[in-house]
Image (cartoon, rainbow, N blue to C red; front, side):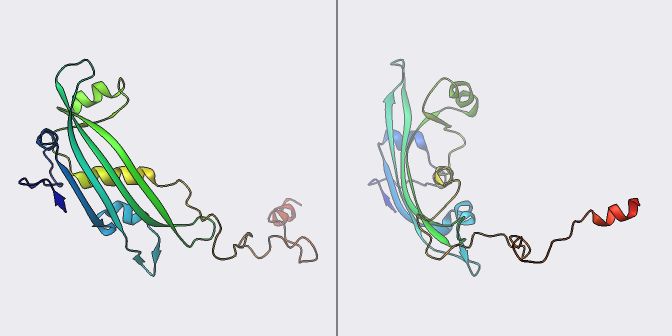
Length: 188
């Protein structure tokens, strides 16, 4: 993990105000397995999820407030990952690129974040409790997952029929029994 010289920043309990005041940067190439919720979404072959990595970078910055008041704490988070998801057409793995490029403004506490959230366009987070950078990153990557992962063209032929062997046998096949026929006999 690359850090700003002379200061070691802990991404598991980041002092975002000091990080922004120092205009600090962190970057890393973490294994996908570090992000448990993201791994839970990954395609598993023989019970073992495919391994990959998440390349990310965080930069802190102090900016003037919207009304020209006190300086505000900002964090720029960027990440790239390729996650093998399950194609919903062929049920095979489909490598899905995920990209995050997001700015966050930090406020003193959760109450302030809730009060200001409806009136601002940027994403707000609270300075306390100190955020776990990996959790924020994982949240953003999870939001980038497609609703329905699909190959552009599946690598194997996809059978588009129901698993019921009697479906589609209307032409020349055995006649399917009406499940209510027995009830009609009881009615007589």
